[in-house]
Image (cartoon, rainbow, N blue to C red; front, side, top):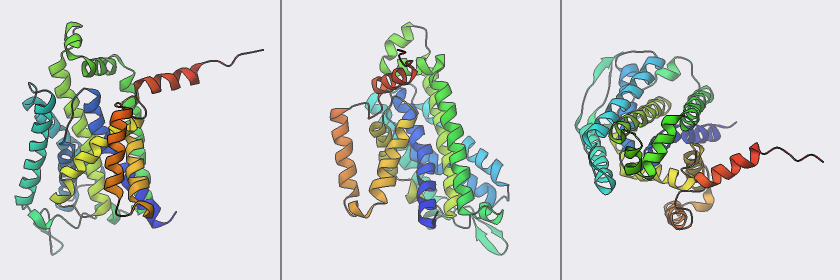
Length: 301
């Protein structure tokens, strides 16, 4: 496998984490334009842990996930009484505030005679711990998809649990969910925290694969894209956002056929799907039909 394909597959895997983060909130009935900020916080936290504090990779990734979870929980708690457009605007404000603060933040230390750490708008480079420990790009790609596979498995198990059913119910009709005994406010705070953990983990992987990050990488455009991935791929299953990522990054961005027209094609695709299939390609009814088809026993003569 050549370097281009390794980089492309790795990028699809990393962006899938933040896409799953946005998807989880969509299932809960909330539109978030701020998941890119949690992705960025996880990237910065994990990068500082290895490049500045000399932590091993595994605990650094765990710290990135934890910081993302704390950030998500904070947003969920502060916006617990907001709904609809007001919640979406609040998450956008949080994301832009985070980006501006990262632009202003400088935290550097001398490591081996080199100043390492976040340097405001100049970014944060020399996040080389993974490759110094012997991870080549191909091995790191396998790590990314292994962690993504574990995350997907956790999503699938959750979606089939009582809590997963309650979450979908709250997303469709929160008033009915309350009448049935679901604490919708508490559920949303927990969901935003879990979504932050997923985004933060992806951010930690992103920082260590690229070895360089800067605040502009985590702008509102990334937030728009990851939100659209779930709307394109579908909200019926956790595999939906991955389909959205594959269409955008795997086909539109990587193909020369759409060079210079990627945003136009992507925007048009989102608009058409919102009209034709508001819940995406793999919506709940499609997923149900597919499960029924595969579970049905073949007829015997």
